[in-house]
Image 1 (cartoon, rainbow, N blue to C red):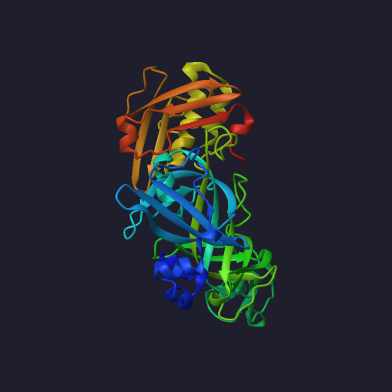
Image 2 (image 1 turned 120 degrees about the horizontal axis):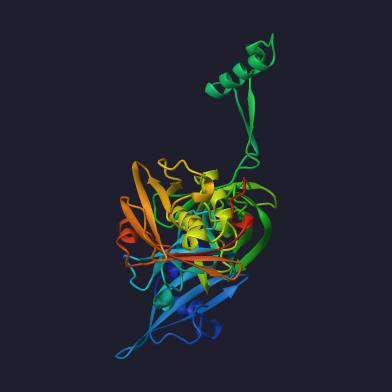
Length: 416
């Protein structure tokens, strides 16, 4: 059995069921139901899976077909039957070092945050997954520790108090700094989800929503939802939301309550649901645009389809580079009218800066350090840009996302 079952069963019960014979006696075959990748229309020739669940939590088992030995049970994992739905880009697949049929997915969220999440159906649908593609998926967090967090705290000494005193002196003539003896800091809006040193583990702060008690064959616990990102977003993308499972043995006596601010540690799990075309994904019908695009390049896009589609090609290619981790801007060498913006993009990552010329639909690119071959075509109410995976510049820049569609007009421009 996979060690993550400790999160569901607790240490004592996990140790008692660590032998597969004991495990199958505790969860007899009559309880199991077929369960498999939502990406498949037909069962896998090599693997099949099943699950047993109660109150929305359960165990998934992976069975491998062997010509010589028949059906072999490879592993058992905890699972949340229905996680929090989201859309994500698959960046890479990560195989488990200990169990070859187990693994994780490296995902890019709508706010361009990379998350690595364990996939209980990894082996079954691995042949169907394509890095760079977009998927609907469900995310859940299996909690190993949970504790309440104060909604505010007081600071009675230190730099922050001194800063507040100085600000009050500037704002209020005659203010005596000694009159300010403390500063109250509110945690009410605090949300976070930070990777730990251990792969697939995260520390989190969230507010408990939709809390309900659960039970899994004698093990009691709770299920709740919560956002783990702030509500503020320049591109108006909703914050990431997770469904949390926490069993009684992980709370050290703390009983969660609706609306409470809590912190803890959790193991992230994902279920891949459906492959999506670019249209309809989080990046297609609103700007995936970089915060680094200058107003001149945005204004140039209003010029339409001149220069073989260059204006939308510049905009959408800039978004692709941004989505792949590059900070983009108009080249500093250009200072002409906005309607004549050349097919040039400056890309920066850390101390590395490249000037990239775009060869749009076969047109002659401007001479510069790197040339990127871009195909830009009108598709419906917008334009679609595609890059060539074999392009040397694509390889050099380590670009994974190679295509994007954006609607024409003001809706494709960044907010603000």
